[in-house]
Image 1 (spheres, rainbow, N blue to C red):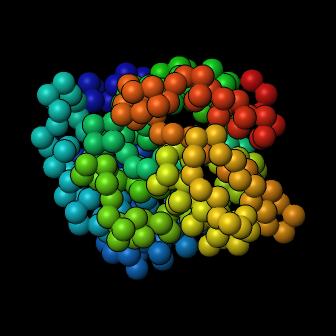
Image 2 (cartoon, rainbow, N blue to C red):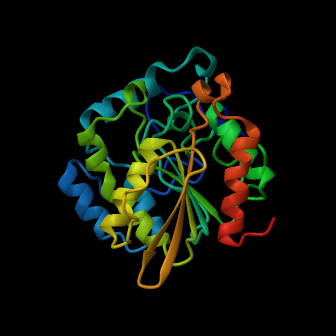
Length: 278
């Protein structure tokens, strides 16, 4: 399928649920969370991933984030001026029963906020999908837009905060308001999950908070984030490996703080710990 932004007039508004955007999980009947209480209730009552994804994708609980993501969808970056923008929260994406979960901070303003899929269409995603492909966890080495044929293999990816934040910095209140979506998603994918890869310290702390809320035992002292750091979480005989990686931001990749071999080593460890064979 071709780029959805090139298939329709580049309307200066966010994508409407049910309007035909590839893989849009919502429709006009999807309930909308308008505050933190709504988020908690709708997350808790989502019985399966499809329902959760739909509800995430229409959330309007954080006024600053709603205003920002929709303003970006209207004004756009010059290089994408002729493309339609998603301009909504980004649901998790990939396998419904993953062995590996990749967690990032939040969608990029002109990446996921444009394409409607986490890490798709931005420089960080170029690094991430290439590494996943080398590890045998992604069907393609690139991901440019929803419906491009990309497929994750025994892997799912999600952002801790579902809307693109100004300057890539959600507030503490926004993080906390959004957290029930992440907690419920982690709960729904746990039956097969073996490994969580946290991209950056924000994702690392978000994972530790979520697993603690779900009854997992976190080692003491609490493990600190670092590239290649590994922590083993346990619950009622279950075992979950948490791996840390520097985020594939341009700040890290351009400076050499994160190199391809460093990134590959994390996903090689993830596949081994999860028992995934390429």
